[in-house]
Each structure stands twice: as C-alpha cells, then as structure tokens.
Length: 385
Image (cartoon, rainbow, N blue to C red; front, side):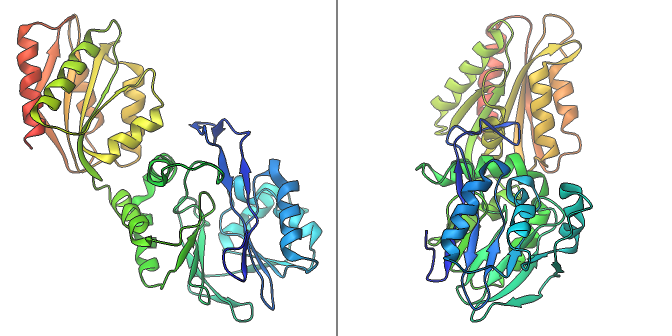
C-alpha cells in the first residue's frame, strides 16, 4: 500500500489473536504496522509480531523490488514490533539497526548474546539523511517503554509515532477510531500521562501532515481531532459529561439500587448514563468508560470485611492509571457491618482532584424507602455538580 510516492506500508493484520498482550479482548483483531521509505538510501520502520514474519518479509521484498535496505529503524522493542529484527539482519547483513541506546541494550535480552547487528545509537534531535528524506528522531521514554522513540520525516512531514496514536483492531475492519483508541490508550499507555504530555509538546513543534502509528490506521486528515483527544486523555481530563455506574451485585439487590439510580439520573436530564456489571463486562471497556466521563458511581457489597473482589481489582486498575479530576459517589450494601464505601474511598486516598459526594447510599440487604430517598439525593447531588 502506498502512503506517499516514497512511503510504503508493509504491515500485517492479525485475526488469530484473541487476547492482545494476554488480557485485552480484540474481536476485530490487531494490525502490526511497518513502513518503508524508498530513497537513495532505504529505511524500514519496525518489524511485526513473530507469527507473521513470513508475511511481513514477503511484503518487504515486494516493496523493495529487488533493492536492499540500508537501515532498520527500531522505535519500540516490544515483541509485537521487534520479533523479526534478527531475521531482518540475517536477511540483510549490511543493513544497520538505528535505535536509542536503551533499545540497543535490549537486543541481547531478546535475541541472545550471539546476536550482534550493526547498530547506530541516536539521541533526541539527531537526524539521518536518506537523500531527499531527512529523518529526525524524537525520544519518547515511557510512552510506554523506556527505549521508545518517534521519527519525523521532514520531506513528507510524516510522524512515525511508535505505539502513540495506536488502537485495537485490524486495518481491514471499519470501526470507530476513538472507541478502540481510547480503550487501547487507557489500557496500555494510561499510567504514563505526564510522559505523553511531554511528547505532545515536542510534536507541537513539528509540521505534521500525517501520523503513522504501529497499530491502527494512518492518520492523514483532521489531525487536530486525534491530537486533541490524546491531549485530553493524557492530561486525565474528562472527555464528556456523563455518569458511569460501576457495580457488583451478589443476589441482585445492589443491582436493583443501581438501576433505580440510573433511572433517577435520566429523569433529571442526564443524557449519558452508563452501567457496568464488573463481574460480567469487559473490565477494560469499563476502564475506558470511567476515564471518558466526568462523574462515576461505585456500588458494591461488603465482602470479607472489605469489598467485592471484582470491584477491588477494578479500582486498582483505575488508581494505577492515575485516575483523577472526577466527581465520584458510593453505594454500599451489607447485611451487617457495612464497610464497602469506607474501603472504596480509602483506595482513592492518593488520587488527585477527586470530589466525593456527601451522600452515600447504605443498603442493609435489600432496599427500603429510606434507601430510595438516598438514591434520589445522590442522583441530584452528582447531576447538579
């Protein structure tokens, strides 16, 4: 596939994978992207997952049309992008591997001490000329590994962005970019918002016409939309107004309270109300929802003196991704010694800029008329923020 007259796409689609990185459900598969710039000297950008080495090598040879590459630009050493480095170097022994020093130090960890490719270590702001194309390197440590770099081609104004601006889904599937990019971002990159912010500042100084990520489609129009979303996500700002209610329920009584709360919110005029049963839903979809909206309710039962396991795991997922800048409320259930709300709130004690609702709904086994009034009060409080 031609991206420009000189830039070719040689990546692959993976419809075999069921869990990306062993945890993320990917019903539409994954794309492992790789690119070639054809010039006086030829540069290949990253490889692909090991299961697709044959397809990738075939795509590369077709793109090269009998020529030999001069450089392999390694932007990220995660195996879904680096697995075929040794194969590339064996096939093209005169080519040089261009990467950060940190990435070069990782090569023996993946390929053994006997693997010694010719390498060029590059630093922030250094460049590499191919002819009319000049590549400028932008380091991006912890987006989302420490060795990561981006590459800017001054001729075509293309930013090769490593895992930044990536998304779930193969390229032969037509889906909403923001939905799967948001789930990808908060699932994989979300902890490293400050580092993403620093990288966005560097990118702001570049005249970018297109973004070529290592997952997902090439972005070549309306770039302000994509960059704006990345800025919102990495600054932990809510993307939309709305309420997400994340809950667990043992015998259905907590769920009944949650559904009443959702109805009350809609009756007040809240257009976006999302409910997630954490014992049954895709937890990463629930994480995406909770970062997307500006308000969240957590409803669960007291369990072994603390909180239900799925809720505990879920809040841990949020806090390790620096969940902040939201208003949140609690609904707890306990036949005796209800402590769920206290324990949930304690899990957020190190989170920044959270506003807690004054109203906490405490159910003892099943809802009563007093609980219904509490639910109405909680709905009004969180809606009228």
